[in-house]
View 1: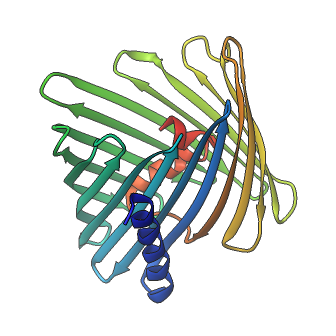
View 2 (view 1 turned 45 degrees about the horizontal axis):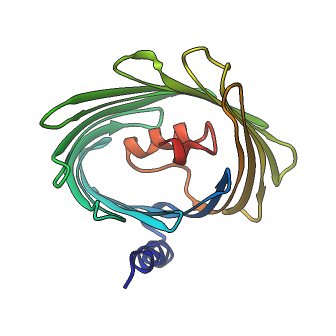
Length: 289
């Protein structure tokens, strides 16, 4: 069985599990995406599911990305136990496969505390073959229509130590939504990128989308502008299309299509919630990330 077939099977199992045990599923998603950037084709297939049974909680995800005939896949899962209401400890395991033999396995531990309005998580992960240790801290706080969130990560191997940071803000009301996120490295704020995205519900089923991504140094001198739309086929399924063009000294354009099935308000783990907040800023998030 090829990697593509294995991942497709994993995605099918995720979808089937959500349908078979809907009473314990708090979130599920399956998405197929296509990007064409300067005549380069990128396809992506991914799925997520979160499940709760009493004090036990489980998350699973499977992702496949194909670029110019080369495939890379990640299958990831966590299993957690709620020590007290809101406080959960969990273990995690990831299996990574990539063309050229760049395969790896990671495992780790995490602890998180969250209520309806805020959450914070600390997570440690080690990669066997790459011999890299990762320590991450993430959190969010919601107030009214606003949510602020942040993320910090340290990667440590035998020869180097690398730290990155991210901050974001989300404003979501009935008719429109604004998202801002910035990420930078230990060399300073100018080493990173900032994305600003907006959504406007033109009708009950159609949403207008726009975003801009630019380097923090000399912001908006160079970057990528996107514009698009999302059409809701039903309460859980949507079709999204975006066109992007570079400006400044950067040259190029492209477009993307995505078909998404999603149920549930938000992810179970704090780390996943923070990533979802950031992904709302631009349709380029999966590529930039």
